[in-house]
Length: 337
Image (cartoon, rainbow, N blue to C red; front, side, top):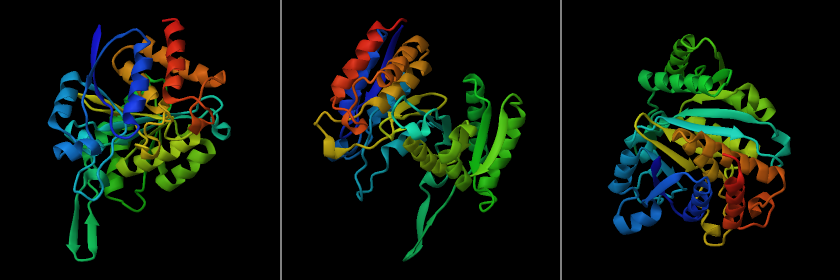
């Protein structure tokens, strides 16, 4: 079966890690057509918008996209491309697996959790105003439908992936109405999934738990801001943002992305680490119902690090972006289907 994937290379090192990821995905032998579209800060200078309409149209048509890191011009009135994509396409579930790779971060070896973050509202809804000079207000929008569906997604994900616990992260002791609504929805949804243990934790206690024994949390479900912060904390446990994958899932489309920045200081030097985007491609392959291809890529990543294979400089190695990707591609190509 042929798959058409919208590819948005992004800014900075985005095109470099995108090329590396294409090489690894194509090594699986599946039939892939890449429909390339551009968005971000560089596009804004030419088009006056960071997100041309043909990008949205392509993702809607193909229903799946792979996206490199994208920059937003600062102080020029442009809205974040990531936020716009999530809101326009209703990509309500941000899913971040936080899983250790061999020999990268020995203090947190064996870490294996998943953060499911509500993606469309909360403080990131962008509802801000100046009440009067010197006084700004941000409105935290929390709705019952959004809370219910993100909790349903988390419990369904736990069941599908053989997980045992879903932990809701909140601050309902202070924000009794907004975070209290999330907690109420979580409790109702939990009753419909008796095989999964529900657990509740305040966000500051969660941050401490993550650096003591993250695995007790298993699958985390939470609102937008908390999920954003905890996802980066989780990345720090397993080697950094250059390692962890990310996805944004909706009913009609899904966007898989690198969650790190554009790294303008190393652009064109062949130093970028493509692991995060390659791991995001693993998630994408599962989503596309190509589990064998996904497993071959995932095994190649693990085997490469376990055996002392090539690493990029940020991980203590000397391999270039494409040398690293080439080593993975060769492992994938000879891996049993």
